Image (cartoon, rainbow, N blue to C red; front, side, top):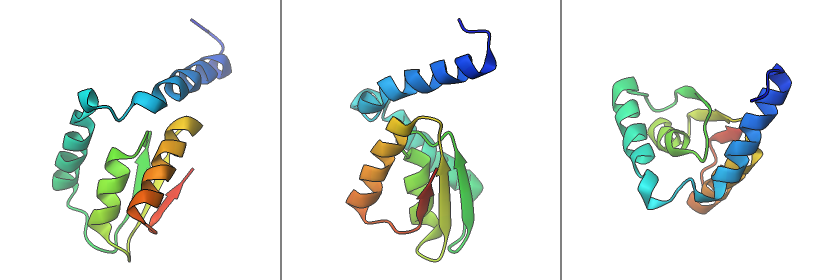
Length: 102
């Protein structure tokens, strides 16, 4: 295991980049369930702004975007560009205009 913080960070990014293509398989459906439960607890209102850190492929991001509606905003952040690429595909698919990814 890398001891240098930057090397460790790069190792983590590489692992999630490799996992990105299979991250939304049926075996991992609990991500969506957990996202829904999280939003029940957070109770975001239409127009709210939310930050999703370690957004991955967007389970929480997408649910949050629907909850805050078109007047709200969700910022999704992840180290893995491959994960964010999958999220971008979903944003386009669902035609959501209230999400920024970084």
